[in-house]
Length: 278
Image (cartoon, rainbow, N blue to C red; front, side):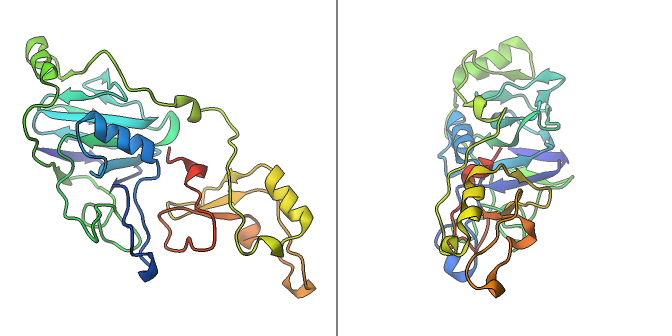
């Protein structure tokens, strides 16, 4: 089984639960930004949650299906379609060979995750299939997907959701899916602002009382210069206390929040909850 990339989208990479145990060597954990959506998508197609999924960001890919394939997409709403029909989210969907999965600009959220039964057949690097873009390894050839790539999928023992196979054969449709769907907390994807918890780091006491108070009460917006390893947040400046020569604001006039994709998370709070991966 295989998926062919017809359009790559803005940033589509293979990610799993991360590359743990190598941070002391400067290798980041990497992995999915939204574990809940990733795990749910894998469970819906009968995989272990350690299998990799395609993490799509802001704009999704277009994928050709070469054989009958069981898929599930969870997370943000990318307006997924198959042959002009909406692709149901948060449920297993059996796609007939020859179909084309189309994902467009994200309507709600930020990221979504596409799982296939059997997982994606790529070689693990340091016990993980996650893509580390800056290092150029892991995932599919150590990079984001691009047009023309062919993603081989793993083998599946037996038939998962046999009623979907019978339904697909009888209906003459390009896809079959159950009437039920898994519950996603979609209320987290829309609205806002969101409250983010943090743990004071070793530099917390270096800031003035006023700066610490402003940091806790003011609003911040994730800036356009953010990436997977680091979120650069736009908001009020925060002056340091102590000796006058040591008084300075956050680098770049705003705080930075490291994520699991960063190799430098020691001494600061990991802020996966800031993005929640969507």
